[in-house]
Image 1 (cartoon, rainbow, N blue to C red):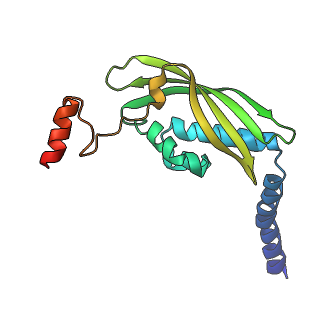
Image 2: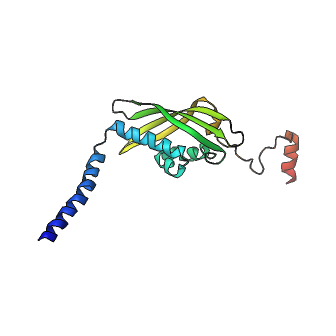
Image 3: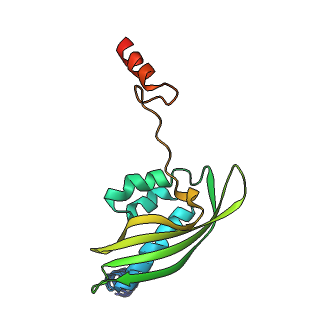
Length: 171
């Protein structure tokens, strides 16, 4: 009898926190969900966990996100990142804006630079997702998208128009 009582008490002590955490998480306010999304995303980018951060980005923006952050952790090191301000908009708080101050340096020069980012968020079922991230002040090299390599057969700036035409005909 004592074993059964001990087992029941152990079960209750293990099960209660699990059940209660589900109840607590489902009752988060929109402001708490937004804060979790903004802080989570910026912590993940700060520590170059881009594989996790991209999950907080809208699917239509993910490729652009990958291009803008391609140098983070390699050529660019983040020294410090601060979420300065977060505000919601809309009757149902369905849109939000966050302002983030990033202090960083390029590995090539080791000179500290500062960039202010503005991030736009949209409310979805279960939280918020980032739909835009732009430089709103400071050094804009932080989110610089790489210049596409020239494709074969593309324009060659060293050739004149006539030379290009001749080259195309000769092929």
